[in-house]
Image (cartoon, rainbow, N blue to C red; front, side):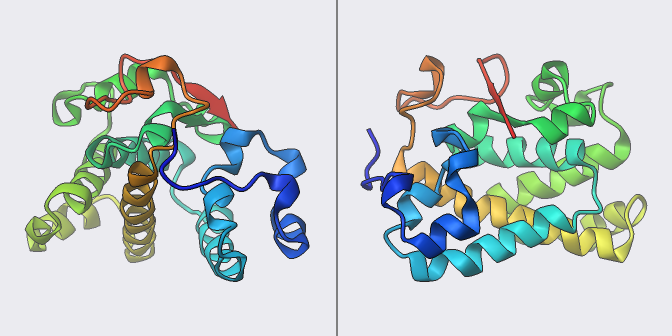
Length: 195
């Protein structure tokens, strides 16, 4: 059970409903907004930022999903680990690739560019002060300055809000494997594909 009370979409303020159109979403897709509805005055800015990251993305959907799932493992955000986004699946994300995230540096299925982006995301989640000149040199070998900034902003969003979501323990709609309190992973477990 969640540690913060959810507010059902039908009880959201009208301005929040108009902004997010919850009638087009499943409960799982409404995600954190069901909790943030306690502060609808803050939702517009958060929605603008997350929407901006999504709508103006230049990195591939598959890459962003791989980074998100690796960060989710370190955050132990159950809802983050259980979800696969349709855009990423349509861009080539497979469960075999998700399984490669267990040891991404050893995976023959990941490109060098994907490996360094995943490494960056992992370090953002687990040891951000170890991100030094050598990591940025590895990133520059595969990504433009603009893409590196986008990757950083995206990873920071995933780290911060994934950790917050993990503390809420939002597990009600998730597959059974994600509902407990023991450490879990996004690989070798059931997943739900959402929009």
